[in-house]
Image (tube, rainbow, N blue to C red):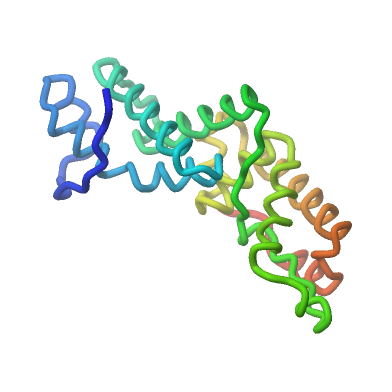
Length: 209
C-alpha cells in the first residue's frame, strides 16, 4: 500500500474515532489520519536519518503498520500520535543498527558551539558548524541520540520521551546529562566550544517538565 500525503480538510473527529472508522472500511478516515500526522512524522524521521528518501520510507512503514493494526488498536493510555512517534523512532534506530550508518542532522538546540573570537569567526561558516554538531551527535550511543533527537529536535518533554520509548523520566534525564557532557567534550576538543559558551550552557536548566 502506497500512501498519499496530500493535505485534506481537517476533521473534528479524534484519532480514535478515525481509527474506528478505518476498521469499518472507511478509506477516507485513514487518509485523514495520514494527512493529520504525516508532516510531523516526516520531520522526526528526517532528523533521525538525515535523508529525505529514508524519512519517507520510515513514515510509509509506520502508517502501513498503523493501518494493519487499526482493527486491534488498544491505546493503553497513550495517544495514537505518540504511538506513531514511537514506531518511527524504533524503525529509524533499527535501520541505523542494520546499516551501521549514523547520519543525523545537526540539532542547533542541543549545542551552539560557536567560537566568538574574531579570527575564528572569520574561518567558520554555517555548514562547518552544522557538520561539527552532526558528527558529535552521531558519535553518541543510540539511547542518548534517541533522547537528544526527541527532546531537542522534536521539543518533547522528558515525560513524553519516557513514555514514547518505554523508559523512566529519570533515565531520560540521565541520558540527556551524559549526552550533553559528551557533546561538550567532543565540541571542545574540536575547537567549537569555548569556555564562555560552556558556562552559558551550564547555566541553562536541564529538566524539561
